[in-house]
Image (spheres, helix red, strand yellow):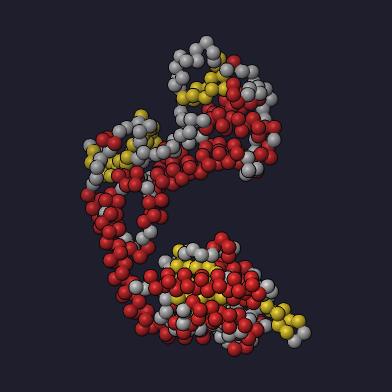
Length: 466
C-alpha cells in the first residue's frame, strides 16, 4: 500500500508529480491512499510504504483537457477527489479517447466536481465584501469569506488584479491572503471575529443599492438560487433585501399602473406604426413570393393573445389571420369554449405565406428555424404593445417562437410557461391539425380536447384579471 501525503488540499502540482510516478510504475488505484499531511495518524503504521520507494519508468502524456479538468476538480472538498483523478488517469493512459466520452460515469463525476468548484469561484468573486479598517500605516480593507471548496488560492490572482491599488486581506477558515500593493502573502486561517463588522462606506452602498432595486425584475426563487442565504452575512446590502421584497409588490403595482396609463394613450398609434413597418418587411426571403404581410388582428387592450403558425393561402390573399379552413375550426372551438374572438388578439409566428407551387395550387410549407427566428422580432413587438397576460401558441412553430426553443406539443401542453416579459404562455395544437385527421371519431375527440384547452386558458385569464 502506498501513502501519498499532500501539503495543501489544492496542491495540483504535487498530486500530478506523484500520480505520474505511480502511474508509470503501474500502481493500481486501490493500492494508493491519498491524505493531507499526517491525517491518517498511526492507523497505517506497518502497513503503508512511502511513495518514494516506487521506481520511475518512462514518462507519458495525457490529453490537455484532462489536466485542465484535474486542476479544477482537485480544489473540491470531496475527500475522494485525489483517488478519483488517479483512477481516471490510469484508465486514460490506456484509452486517451475516454476524455471525450461524456457518458463515462467517472468522467461525469469529475466534471460535476469541477463545475461546483467553478461555481464556488464565481460566488466568492460576486459575494465577497471588503470593509475599511484604519491602521497605523493607513487604511486597509479586510474581508471575511467561507468558501465551500478549496478555491482561495485559485482566486487570489483575480483579487490582486481587480484591487491592485488597494491594501487588502481576505480571511477564511483555512487560509488567509494579504496583499500590500506589491506582494501577496499567505497566512493561516482565521475566525469570523477577526474581520470587521462594517464601515461608513457601507451606508453609502446601501443607499445606492436601495435606489437601483427594481421590483419589476424581482424573482425571489431565482435570486435565492444565485445568492443563497449563507452568503448574506458577508454582504451589507442583503440586510435591506427582506424589506425590499416585502415592498416590491406594491411598488411593482404602482410601476405597472403608471406604465399602462402611458402605454394605453400611445398603444394604438404604436400598433399602427408597427403594422405599417411590417408591411414592408424583408427580414427573410419569404416576402419575395407572398402576396403581402399578414399582421395580427384584434383589439390591442385585451389580456389574451393567440399565435398561430403562418398565414395560409386564403390569409395571404385576405391579409388577415385565421380566415381560411383552419380559421373556421378555430372560431368553432372558441365559441364552444365560451370565448369571444373579438375580445382576443390573433396573430402568427411567421407573417408571410410559405408554400410550394403545384400547378395552380399553393401548398403550405412549414417554416424553418431561421424564418421563425427572423419573424420573432415582430411577435415581440406585438406583445410589447398589447402586453397580454396570457399567450396561447397554436402548434409547434408558434410554441418555438413563443418559448424560444424547440418543444413538443405533448410535453408542453396543458401547463403554464413563464415568459421572459412576465406573462404566461400556454401551448396547444394548431386547428389545421384537426383538419388532417381522417378518422371522424378521433377527429371529434381531438376537437373536444382542443376546446378543453381553450376553456382552461380562458379560466386562467379570468383568474388573472379579477
